[in-house]
Amino acid sequence: MSFEYFLAFLISCALVYFLTPLVRHIAFLRGIVDYPSEPRKIHSSPVPLLGGWAVYAGFAFTVLLWLIFSKVSFGYFIHLPYFAGILLGGAILCVGGYLDDKYHLPPYYSIIAPLLAVLVVIVFGVQLSYINNPFGGVILLDAVKFLDYPVFGGVFVFVWILGMIYTTKFLDGMDGLVSGVSGIGALAIFFVSLLPQVGQSDTALLAIIFAGAILGFLPWNFHPAKIFLGEGGSTLAGFMVGVLAVISGGKIATALLVMGIPILDAAWVIIRRLFSHYSPFQPDRKHLHFRLLDVGLSQRQAVLFLYFLVAAFGACAIYLQSLGKVMALGILLVVMLILGGVLVYSYKKKVKNEK
Figure 1 (cartoon, rainbow, N blue to C red):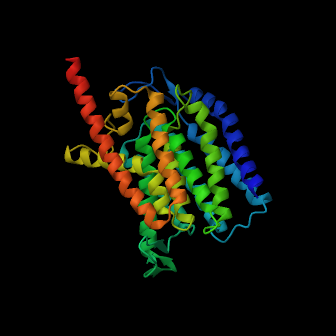
Figure 2 (cartoon, rainbow, N blue to C red):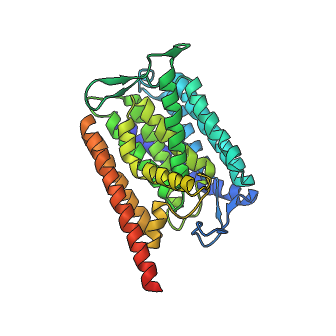
Figure 3 (cartoon, helix red, strand yellow):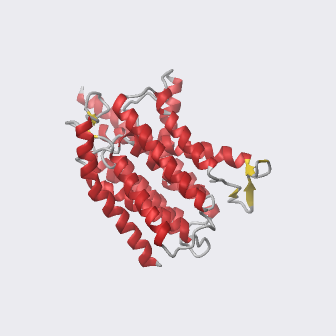
């Protein structure tokens, strides 16, 4: 069985790696290129977009391949309609991302694809009936049902996945950041799914296939990037991590630990924009990764530092039980506050010394 996981990872990774140059060529032909025309765009020359199409293609092909030929028993945690919802939702994000990258859609249009993608997975049955209570027992989300679907669970799934989509969308500001972080997130869910007390072989397989796909793209996307994920790829990454957390039996705490720093960063930036009377979708250079650049780190150093933090808390998610994860989330919040304070202080000191 372990060889099968390795093979799934390898096939998905190889497909994306070899598809990416073709997608890159198509992006250039179609003129779907990101020009460094704004202060927040830190690349020095035009870079093609649409990288998410390669990630999706490699992921979808490998999933279909395993559905046809694999001996893994699907149906206990991941029912077959789930796959249709996930693949269709991913395709919607890629199409919406293509339109956004091509025509630079305003936020009230670009949100349509994420909304449709989340609704699709819900319609195809992805649901959450309960969440493990770290203090014992479970928190039921199926007290009220509509057509046998848990209403509160549906609302939670909708908000959770949409939030993850926009977390990775906002995170996509440096070469290799989203692809690396979401790859670490998928690997964390893979290892948690294989724990003896969890034992979810089908969830583990889906997680390792996505990990292979997104990490197969990383060599092309790491600094200096030869291609970007684009809108479709950045939203697909969050969509997949969010869905994997739900279908793995509500591993929300695991995903929160792995994606905690990007989530807190996105939340802080949105709150700051709202208090400053700006649109929460208005891009700027106030994100954590840009702060790291401002204090003197190179782009590679900043990305590797964030990889380290995400991987460290991802390891905690694998080895800690529910109550331990809550404590780790508290530590994560403290780390984020300290890091943010140090970066702001260091930047102000640097500016003062330069005057």
